[in-house]
Structure formats: structure tokens, C-alpha cells
Image 1 (cartoon, one colour):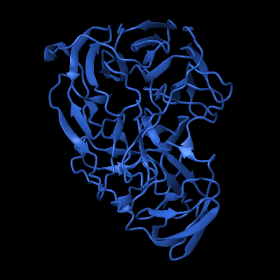
Image 2 (cartoon, helix red, strand yellow; image 1 turned 30 degrees about the horizontal axis):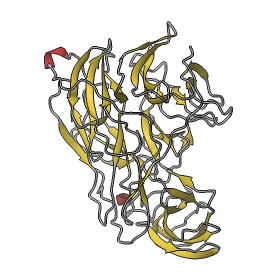
Image 3 (cartoon, one colour; image 1 turned 45 degrees about the horizontal axis):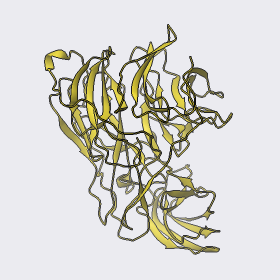
Image 4 (cartoon, helix red, strand yellow; image 1 turned 90 degrees about the horizontal axis):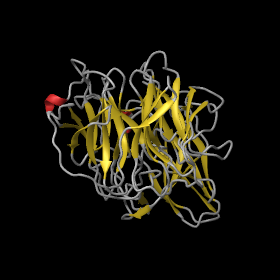
Length: 476
């Protein structure tokens, strides 16, 4: 099926300056315009009959759990306190299929990772914190054998001269000054050795990161490596975002970088593990979802906002993991459309997505597609407000979604509430939860080990230096 198409418009990035010791977060923004919508509404617990628990984010700092009848709202994780003006942000929770862990995107270790943001996991009772992408968590390095790493930083032609430098396994980053056309060498001591693994250095300037040559470390020795900095070769917004689990829980997938390239991580990756691609073809997976059932375990559903191969965009695709082609084009959303979120129905019979159909629209709405009929239907009919991220109940009968009366693009603090509705479009609660975002609905009751073992520490090493960085608008 084809939707109206217009000249292509890609998502933009708006940078907001912050104090010079702040850190960077973010990614692409969704375009839109504001409007008014009916206010008020309260939930009748008797109206909701479904299972599972809803996770959501408040103030981009707190991870909450709440029941579908709006009871039991409580915090299970708060971003670690940051010093010297650093700001840590939390986004995009996703339940593991067995409901025993909630993963989320966070920037709180961006100065102790080659990524700007990593994917972390925590048990529903707030225990067992861990870093899933680029493991291990920085607090777990003490027990590893140690080595030294000498990194040559070459600023080939960039006018900026102050860089943050880090190498995987180091206890903390360093700040160096390298003027254009010059090099300098910095030595990291006490670097954890991930035996047999490549350990990458990174240089950071604002929203841009340069990944250097990998080092192979041996305990007690010194390894040499290099990072070359060119104005044209940096990776902007280079971090893991939007986690989604394989249905059997063996793999966690996310997107990385501006192009939203899909990457896959083992559910419990050993230290020093590097990523593998979800697909063997360069496609943008912004957004994407994994098949929810055993039969669809290898399926990937995604919106390709920009096709690297053909130059087209605005297509909803279904393919299989490891595929060397884009897959089957299910729906042409149009060049100027924007898809905010995308989720399979729990039984795999179809999927939902939220979309602004044309660039001139002042609203976005929720849509449903059926694989059997190959037809789509519009579920909401907002004309002046936005449906953004959403989650579906495990029985497929309810949807909780972000609702905003303002344009969510270009700012981290757009007011957003969660609304609850039946799958037939009947609004149950407006709002369901006020001042909330990024809903995720578990498949079953949260599972907690009888004797959970928290991983040691979760607060990153404080940064006491000064360097110029920027806070871009947060991904929506």
C-alpha cells in the first residue's frame, strides 16, 4: 500500500549550548508542530483488565514502574549524580522477554566508553545493574589484569584543539590539547586487559567522536595505538539507542550513530565484546522492532527513513536478521512523512506505528497494519497534538502512548504525558500518567531473583577537568 508522498525532508539536529564542563547526549529529532487537545480525564481501574507492568521515564532521570490500573507508581532507578555540571540522561526502556530485566539508554558513562550512550540493564527491584553494550561497566575493572596504553593523537586539520581521550578498559578519561597539524601522546596506566579482545581508543570533541586503531593488550606491558582526527571523518552522536530484544532473550539489538545502523549484542556479553550488525546491508533502522514470537524470532521490522543504497526513503520494511537485502517493503509512508515509533502486535499478526504523514501536518497519529489483510487503519484522529513513543499490552488489547500538545523537536523538555487507550481507539485515561515518557510494557509479571546480586557500583568516575561540549536536543 502506498501513502501520499512529497519531496523528502530529513530529520534535523538542534544543538543547545551548555556550560563548558557538560557532557553530550542525543541524536536525531522528530519534526512536528504544536496544537491543542482536550484536557483532563481520569482512569477507572475497573476499565482495565490486562497483565504486565509498564515502565516509563520521568524528567529523563528516573525509571518508574506502574501497573495498568495506574497503581503502584514507584522509581527503580535514578541516573547517578553528576559533578562539575555533567548532565546524565535516561531514555528508551525495553523489557527483556522474560520480564526479569529492564534495559535502557543512558549517557552516564559517556566519558568511560567509546560510545556517547550505552544500553544498561536493571532488575525490576532496582538491583543487578549492568552495562550491556561495550561491557563491562566502569566500576568492574578492578579485578582485571592491567597494562599501559600509549595513544598518539593526531589533529590533522580540525580547528578545535581540546579533546577528551579514552581507551576501553581505562579507569578514567584524560583531556589533551592538540592544535591543528600537530600530534601529542598520552599514556593511560592501569588499563584493564580484556584478554584476546581489541580495545579501542576514542577522541571526543563536542558531539563528535573519532575511533582509533584497536590495541591488543598484554598484562604488564605497554601497547601503542593512534587516533587520527580529520574534520570530515568524525562520528556524530555515536552511541547505542532504542534497545529491542530478540524474542528468546539471547540477543539485545539497538541502533547506533546518526544513520541508525542496527547492531546486535549477546544478552550477556563477555568483557571487551564488540558489536555485530543486525543486517548485512546498510539500512537505517529508525525506528525498528524485533519479532515477538518464536516463529518470528528472526524477523526485523523497521522504517527506513533514508535508504543508503537507492537514495529513497519513507518505507516500512520487514526482513530477517543477517539479511543482505532490505527485505519486503510493506508500506510506502512517503518522502515527507515521519515515523516516530514502531511495534509488532504481541501475537505477530500485525504492527502499530505512530506517524506524521506530511511535513505540513500539525499532528501525528497511531496506525495499525494487518499482515493477513495487508490493510492499514488509523487508530487515533488527532489534528493538533502528537502521538510519539508507545507500548502495547501483552494481550494486545491496550496501548499506552506519549501524548504532547507541543512540537517535540529541538528540545529535551517538551511536556509529555502518557495516555491509555483500547486497541479499538477508545481513550481510557487522558492522562494515564502525567509528566512521563518512553513507555514499555512487560509481557508478564516482573521476575526478580530471590537473592539478587547487584553488580558493584554504578556511579561513574567524576570528571574534574574542563572542556567544551554541547547538549543537543534529545532523541524523540
